[in-house]
Length: 147
Image 1: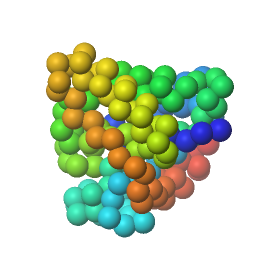
Image 2: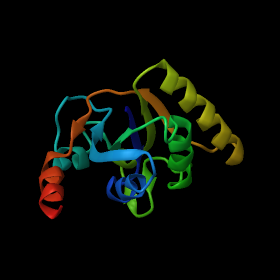
Image 3: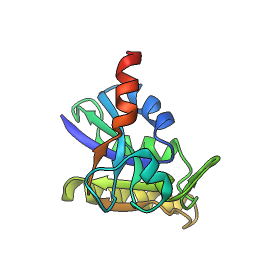
């Protein structure tokens, strides 16, 4: 199993979409890229933590490649809008790929370049090393109760 951590707007829609991919065995909503190792939705919305809303995927690379996951990532959101997706605005809604190792970093650069050509150089997606990932505790409990 491998892990992917992706920010592409409010985490609920992408979480559902990624969970339907063959080879993705677990999804989890959380925050990443911020200044602290733990945060809350309210703190993130206040804009001071620098966290992005993310979906963490556990996937089997024998079934779906990291490259295919990133292709899907670029297909399900608008990577040309800075700090927003649809009606949601703020730095927590930015487009960002958080990599765990050099292999993921290199793949992320390659795929981002491909889509940047497609979008005539307008892609604003950041590529960053995973930093201060934390689960969205206040939503995780509600999610578990619904299952």
